[in-house]
Image (cartoon, rainbow, N blue to C red; front, side, top):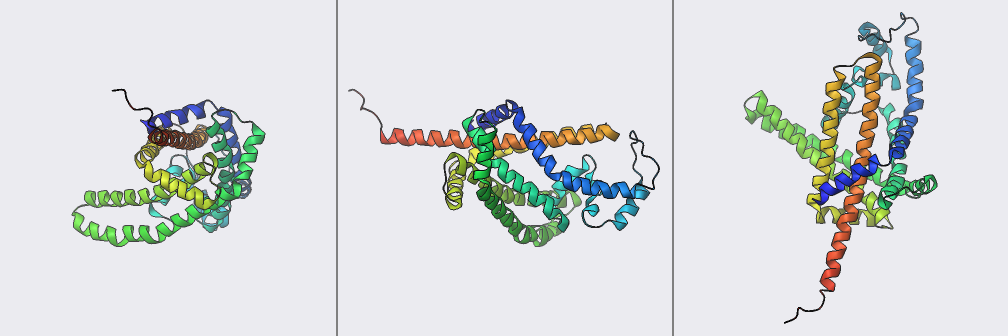
Length: 324
């Protein structure tokens, strides 16, 4: 119940603060704008000798795209069919599950995106922790104050995730999968075996992500002075409230899956500029879910910590003995 209340409160806090969603959307999309403009210039040059484009067209010139990809280098090579509509989140999920390497040129936008979120975490936790508007200046100050520490936490989590891919993922999806596939008997069982291994590895990745999340929460809401203190507090909290933490995580995952299903259904009905608008709406909704996750984690930490403190005080001061 405590996880469900935290989830409900997280949704309500985000709904009551549309300015936060606007701010996060503008910052994240604005950070990617230079890379989009650079790619747009190259696409404009490549399309210079093509017939005028019908904005209402639902088909793509496959011949032009194949020729463009044959000569694409650097950032241009990322312009693949996977960037269109519902294929984009599916490609991201496939990359996450299989550990497919991304082009090195993506390190710059990914690094900038991570740096922006390291800044946003501080302001968002300050705002959600207090439960009311704090103003632009306190938000910026909180983001700046925790920027270095949160960047370090994000980097450590990324390194840990990378090590998991190099070791556990390679072992699970390599020898372990082959061992199970030989004994599975048919394609259906092989598929289920692979899904089971995905879930095992996904649980490990989720554990790293949750420890990093609650380390940030502990830094802002519990006043952890060092990264070590924040990680120890995070580990103790996750271990002490494991069922609430897991339940809240699954609720946020379910919300994201619901969004994916809705996007997948809607994407089949819209094309052209409507499809582009739908894709942008999906991005905004996805950011809203991420804000909900942050808000609900902050609420769970506050509620569980307050409850644990109250229980501790009650044990130390049991009150007067009952009358006989």
